Every structure is written in structure tokens, then in C-alpha cells.
Length: 265
Length: 337
Image (cartoon, rainbow over all chains, first blue to last red; front, side, top):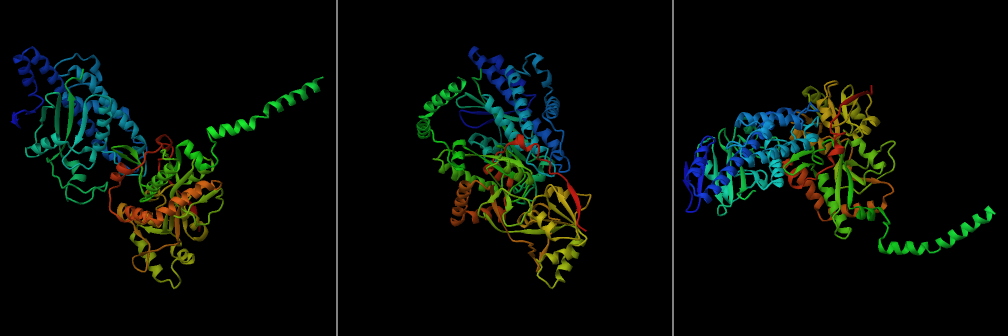
């Protein structure tokens, strides 16, 4: 599935199962230099997809524990970095079939390229650090809402990971509550394009900067729990004091974006 | 013989020390030794500030997780930023970093006496008689017209209190009136605050409950709290934004009932005269320029999302120390019947 944007760029929308087909095409039809480029791109693309999936899994784990985190009657929540890590690994395995706990001994393959083997543990570590640092806030007794939510977790984990790697991981949306999540020009164009399409388990992958950087945009859609803060009635203040967006289930919430330079190694 | 040796030693030491005064002068010229606590702060480049870990919204909001990390925000935090900003200018434009210690309100006084804090800011009243609190000094006020107010949750208690207040012929803020109105009720106050000292001084015939924090008072089931007394601006914020099922005690219709008139101040050690002059100067200029009024409007009257403010203008804090304090605690009964 392709959508022509302009003369120089091609936007690809891929699902996980479709990924193998373009990969194969690159490998089987390219020249020698094209072959190297294609493999690099494919590796970066699959790594980016997995990174986005892992961040999404972390957000889901936080979401699943939101009631516990916000329970004012409970002090020590037992939601330690280790507990979080176990659930993150499980969630990621359920979504991708990849077991991060045995990643070091898993042979490199198309499904788990070398770059992903290097970067996925780094994102797990960054995510654990976020949960570790949040312990004093999470374990406050007598305080309900603590603003430790999927979005703030995701921002911190992405920022920490990005500082330690050459890959830029980010959450963004067209109406960001956090100015730091403001989409850049490219992200804005993709988000607007995605907003006009029906919900799909797909992502956008595109080469930018004259082919030097691969951008991957994985959309996030609103589900039931999100609507407590982002749903109707529009303009009413949510628990944190932000005006609700008036969103409905299935609407585009935003995206996890990955920018990976193709000369990573 | 040994006596001779001893005297000789003293003479030698005396001769050797003759130039020491000059050496001290030279050292002072090259690297001046701090003459007062403000200069000490300039040399240290850090201001150790205490702040209550219990939320005193809108002065102090609960410690929150933001996209920037852990932050605390509120009017008192903005004031700390104003003080450190002025200190930075005073110290020759070298940045002075505020190091926030979030501890229980009552422990702020202990830490200040142990010289572990330079000052603390937590909606503390300067004009309430407190027994046994010494070694402290207060700045000029940064928040005027605070005071002790009360809130109730159960409608029957609210109705009873309102009916009794209406039936009084005396001034409603007279302690005797409140004593009669609240008689037999379970009244919670936060330990160490002026509400505790007011209740202990004036309110007999109640069941007084000391709580570690306001959240602990709201949670208390044994005993169930009838009335919470505390800082009126804090209680007003809570009942209008956080716990809308609670109502303020009012007099003459909607006017909140105030039991005292209090002004909130910055607290420092008694002997830190220079620091007090400095802080007073900062507060005076903020007041004169209208900044204090603007801060009050921003935090007390405006509608805002505090997590957003925490992210954009909040301050980080020493999380390792907070771990001992973040539990909002419990309540303990103290009969006053």
C-alpha cells in the first residue's frame, strides 16, 4: 500500500505481516549497493517498529496499573521496576512473539535484527529507570492522582532512551498537552494523513533527509480508558485539570515516532 | 632544665606566629571568608529550602510526575524561585540552586533548628501564639488575609453547625461561640499547624484529632471526622476543586467563617539577621511591584492544570529524603471533653 506524497518521497504504510514482502523485494531486486542500503533500511525499519511496540507495551502496562497507582489508600504499591519489567516483557511478547528475557541468546534473524537486539534492552532499561525514579510519587499514600500516566511515562522513557542512543523516540499528537510533544512538520503531515483514515494496525515508514534518516510513525488510537481524560464533554477539566479533547473511542490519539539515521553503525 | 625548654618553645612559637595576622589578611584578600549567612549562601551556591510534603494546595501541590521528572509546584514554590533568583543576582549573577527538602510540616521546624535548612516556606503563620517554639524568625508576610477556617462533610453536621451559628447573638469568630457550636463533635487539625494551637487554646468540649496531614484527615474512618480546621485558603481550594462533597463553615450566607486572621511568612533561624533582611527586601519589592498580588491571583483564583505548571515551572526535589516522609500519615484522637 503506497501513497504518493511528492516527486521525491514515498510514504509506505505497512503492517507487521506485510513487512517481510518489501524486505524480500529489496533484497531480491537490488544491485550490490542497493542491497546494502536495503538491508540497512529494513533493519532500521524493523528496529524502529519494535521500539515503538515496546514503548506502546510499557504505556499499556502503566494503563493496566493506573487504578493501583492512583489508589490514595495504599502506600507501598508494590509496583517496582522489577514488577514493571516482567509485565513489560510479557506484554511485548504477547504483541510481537519476541521474548526479551532470552534476547541475548536468540539468534539474529529478520524478525530480530542486530540493531534491535542492541536497542530493545536499552529501552527496557530506560523504562525501568523511569519507574524506579517515580517510586516516591507512586507510593505516596493519601494522594490520588499523581500524573504518572502512560503519556508521562512514555515521554520520560523515550527521552531517556533517545539520550543514550542515536535513535530518536518520541510521542506526539496534533493537540499536545505537553509542548515538548509538539509534532514537527513531517509528523504533522503524517498525523493529519492518518487522522483521515480508518483505524488500522499499521505504521508509516519513510526515508527523509535525502535518504539519510528513516522515520517511522506508529499511530495510537483512543480506547475506553483514555476517554476518562480525553473524551466528552469537550472542554470539561479532567482529573489533572486539563480540558478534555472530546475524543471518541477509535479516534487517532497521536503516534509514537522513531527517527533512525541509516548510518547507525 | 625542662622548664627552660618549655619557655624556649613558647618564645619560638610566639615569634613564628607574629606574621600570622598578615597571612590571614592576605588570604582574606585573595579568597574572602564569608562574613554573614547570605555570603555563605553565595559561596555554597545552594539554598536549602524546606517545604511541606503534605499538599497545601494552592501553596504546595502534591509531588507529581511530569515529563521533566519529579516536580513540586505551587505559590510557595514560585516564591522560592523568586528568592533564589534575587539571591543569584545578589551573588554577582552566579546561579543559586534551590535544594528542596520535602518533609512533614512539623519536621520543618526541627530541621531548621538543626541547621539543615536555610529557610522554609509552607503557608506558615507568623502571628499565632505557639508554645515552646523558639529559635525561629519570620519574614514580612507574602500572603495576607489567611486564617483558620473549617469544613464539614456530612449534611447533618453541616446543618447543625449552620443552625447554631445563626442562633448566636455574639460575634461569630469569638472562641466561646465556636466552643459551643462545635461541642461534642470530632474536630481534626493537622499537627503543628496554627489550627492545632487554636484548638488546644480555645476549644474544649470537642474530640480533638491530630492528623499528620489533610489527606489523612479526609481518609480517617476511626474516628470519623466531623469538622476539619485548617488554613482557610487551603480548605477553600480543596472544597472547590478537589473534594466537592465537603463544605466550608460559613457565616452570613456564603462568607467563609474565619477564626483567626493570619499572614503567611518565610521562616528562618533567629540568628540569621542578614538572610532575614534579604528575604524581607525581596518580599517588599515583590509586594510593591504587584508581583505578590499577581502570584496570588495566578494560584488562588485562576483555573489551571497543576501538572502542567509542575512540568513547566515546578522545581525538582531531593527525592532520597522524601522517601521517609511521603506517607500522608494517620490521625490520633485526643479527647478534649
